[in-house]
Length: 281
Image (cartoon, rainbow, N blue to C red):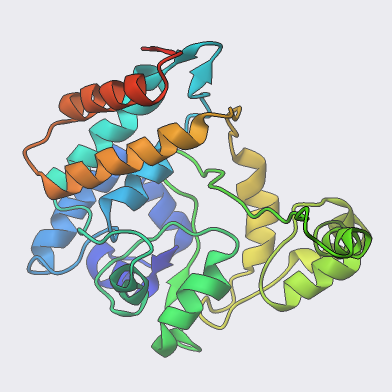
């Protein structure tokens, strides 16, 4: 997602297609980010924080982090560490830690042009934290440089202590698989991952936000963004790698002298201790 007012002021356009042409690669993103930082008097950044950028980029390749008994740290993750350091060193990203109060507040402060945007980000992150953006056409949605990503998701489960498992299962089916559930999600600006509801009622693909003007966010997500995403194969120990990467990214944020090579070596060392049964490449 991008702030239209800031894009217009510092990049010369708030048109989605023009911005996508402007940023075919992350290298082009870095070059413009340097210009924005200087032009704004060191006040405006392209992205709120290094963790946002690093997590986004590491999901773009579609490469599995683990193959058999080998963790492919260099092949799958080195590029994201390289770019994270470029972003940091060129003031393309601010120093905000993701999911902190300051990070949430940044969506309404007008100091960051871009933000990673999941389907749920609009109603749950952008709208509540940018009260002045309602009806002001503050935001736009665009394809990211070098491709969009699958970033997490939501899981609904039934606990073993549930008193009525059958009823709980009926609710999960309603919320995730039914056309009626898709209608409920549409009313709150969200989508289900089931295909059938949108085949039965194509109009459910469409939803708009008062923060995004006339742009049809639902159709863009379902028809343009999702089909082009590369989804990597998941593994049971991915979460350990994910948490370790986040710790390394925090170190990069706090220590500007730390290089991407040093970050990779630290990542390998941490993983060799936490996951000793794997070969770390």
